[in-house]
Length: 144
Image 1: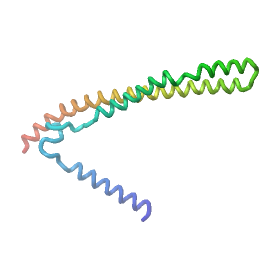
Image 2: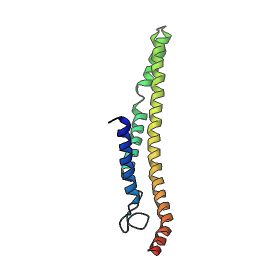
Image 3: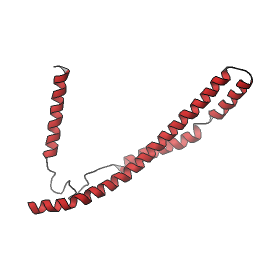
Image 4: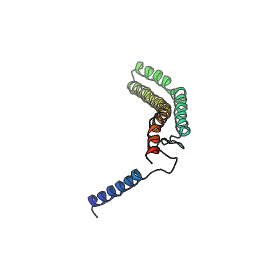
């Protein structure tokens, strides 16, 4: 079987699964905001745990990730003042460390903030979806 044949077969199987899922109707009381469990499910405990871990990592990195940098800077200045070529190289190490540490701290903060936003946004989306679909569910009951 060639790649193109296998790829076409996989796309067809995926399309069938999607069609079956879209054509299926939820059991009584499920889906569509008609009561029961919400359609949009986000496990906020998981998001909160990951966001909390990112925040904790950022806090620890900001305290513990910068211990060697001041001593490296002092050593680089001393070596440079002593006319050692390694002083400039050590200063580059100092600057790169500071740059990479800042990037990592910003990334941890971004992850934490994004997950906090995601939790809040999913809760708002669920309220909006249920509010928008409730009148449609009532109309569906009249059409039966």
